[in-house]
Length: 246
Image (tube, rainbow, N blue to C red; front, side, top):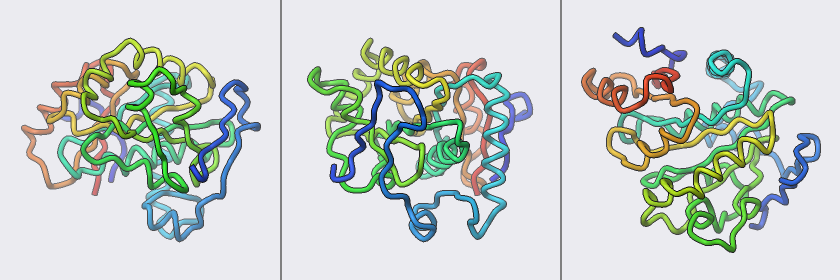
């Protein structure tokens, strides 16, 4: 895996009692934290991991993303250019590296209808998620935000009502949701784990709602034409760059 490549260079059992009404990081309630062995099993970065090079790569990616957004918080969609390309791995670890900074919090929103994976970040079973919130007026944002095994990192799972997700993601409620979760904490960084952008109308819809898009390229597994097709789908002003995943 390498750092971001600019487009130009391409040539509840443990459900969180999250106090969303109080935007102070120090008062965010936590659950038990993952052990190093549990983090390794989930392919999540952490200080002291056996391969510090991977941790340092994600730290460098964090620096680059912050520079692109002039240190402001943001919503970033992460999408692979192909199936099983490592998009969820990158989304989870970008959120993890931001959460390592004690002055920041991060949030993973699982919108990957075809391969949801936010559950691995959460202790216990996540019963409801973003699609339930968007389709049920009785469900609030606080009901779908879960604490994870990583301090200062929250997760919102996909949920059980994924049929018709494209329509949900296009709704005014989704737009308001994105604005709410971004503005609630000034130091919250949101990463949307999206399906492959080339094959998914949902990913293309989500790309229009975010501040930036990171495309994940599985090294040696996709053609140049397919990479270019993915780039062409994303608004040039929103494309943060490419991450090559080994």
